[in-house]
Length: 317
Image 1 (cartoon, rainbow, N blue to C red):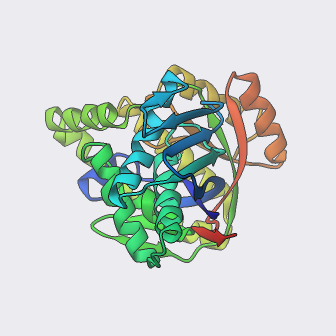
Image 2 (cartoon, rainbow, N blue to C red):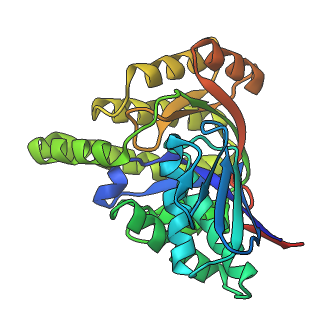
């Protein structure tokens, strides 16, 4: 059996503005997807379990599927299997990440699957090759929307800054809380909405993008110094700017204000494309437990996470 696991991610700062070339900062988190590959003579079987699907199986040799919800997940694994012309194997996926929540679930599944399937076939791909193949496959499945940041973070871990290119950042680990609305987001529609707004009101949206980019640059030394109070203020400002672009929602706002209020967060903002998905919150004096309670009371799903964590892990049994 060959096993690989890869981390999810959060966007700390810079959503949407990054499409126009300003900097965004992302960090790998310690919620992971794990892919096990073992021999299965005569068929190719995919099984999976995560927080939202609760489990399914799909036999590529017969087309038989045990869950109508599985289509989203199997697209990515099927693309990996086609890439390596994989046969006679069972691929088991376990993920602690909800799908379509802006936490990079598809990227970490693709990266772990590429690493596990290729190694099971006897290939020894470098991390650079794994990241490049994974990005190409995710982008293909998502019809051109895959982000190189997501697959790079799933492969290398740590923190990355993306603008015209991707650069690693040497920053310390950071404890945060993620709140999931339970509402999946549609990255494509949210990006298109903001870009259409930019075309109509370029004189207004342009400065908002510049301000979001400036926040990303200011945040880097604050993370390095451990200046949580000012980092939280930047999170709040960034969220306000994103809300002005129309990518927040009632569910996201409820979690943000629950985190800042009863949760005592130093800062809270949506993460990812918006329209649904997740928020991130920086714990204050009351610690992460108060945030977990506040987000759950606001009807969200809450997780403690560590940002800047380890990337791809590969094992052979």
